[in-house]
Length: 401
Ligand code: PMT
Picture 1 (cartoon, protein in one colour):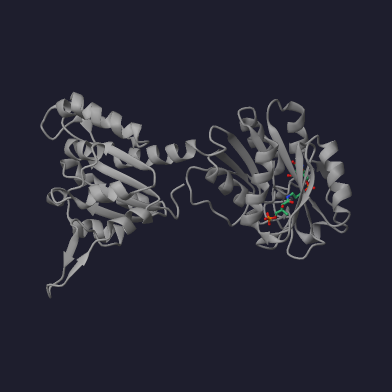
Picture 2 (cartoon, rainbow, N blue to C red):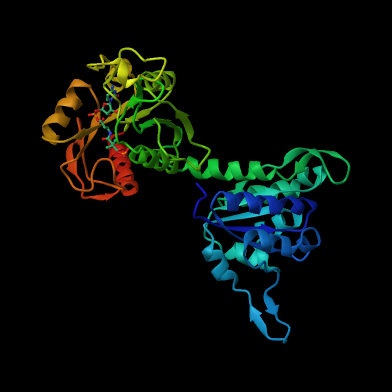
């Protein structure tokens, strides 16, 4: 959710400011660009150098900068505010809350806040009686009425030695609050999505298997897009060299079709949308040899195969409210074969891709698809990156829902 976002952090002067460098670090690790503004009193609690080093940006605290030669430059608070996709004030002292609530603008943090058009998150921090005070409550209520989100202070030991509510939320909690808040506005918020991806490997002996060329990329891109749209995502992946950086996607790694079926059935009842992008082997060897098969032991080698469960067809039989989307990879008659699969597997929709189209299917970072829905018919798309294809597929699914 935070990858590629510009996050502006305003730090006001409270002891909790010592925790904010860690928040900068968390945002950076999440892939965000971070800029920090300090009030003068905040710089007594936390060093601008620490924050500049962690954020990899200069940390202004006053309206003007003066260099060694005495030349003066203006810190452009308007540009800074417009740069931000998200502004976080952490810690927000009682003084800063009150000033923000009443439009005062006597420091760089406050003028930047007044210029900001982005969502603003506020993490108050103060002693327990200050936090309880009616004027603090009024400031917070006013800031909520402006559309800002308050990250509640937490309970615990305070700098005064007293114990109670007033501690700034821990940096990890600030981060998850913001991520959840952003997710709530997303179209798939509250939905659980299962995506299968990659091939299955059906073992013949400890060394060999029956597999296919699926890289998993199409399914991984669909899972990542679902997360961006706010869903809770479970990715059930066959063997691939791919990784998911975002830990909020639950990745379950399997090898065989039987293992994939078991994992899918474990999560399907609670899910809302299922996407079968995996290239599942239809058959597996009837017997798996304990030891590597020696070529001398077989004059006329043959492998007896048994049918694997058809995972997606099985789901269509037990589904209640779930939307089930299949894929069909064809080498000829894509529309005819895809339409047949849509019907026989009783799917809500199917994505057709054909190895007849250059750049489509597996072995590429691109795909060319047709989206065939029971409800809305056929829609064709040009060749695109698999990431862009995932965006198109999700746009079609959202129309279906
Ligand atoms: O992984 P990439 O390299 O990015 O390539 C993406 C892809 C080409 C693998 C993907 O876009 C794709 O087409 N996946 C489905 C490939 C396939 O095997 O289709 P199928 O016609 O065999 O299966 C039809 C549907 O039934 C699929 O949703 C499949 O997941 C499902 N199935 C198939 C067999 C089986 N035993 N159980 C299943 O659930």
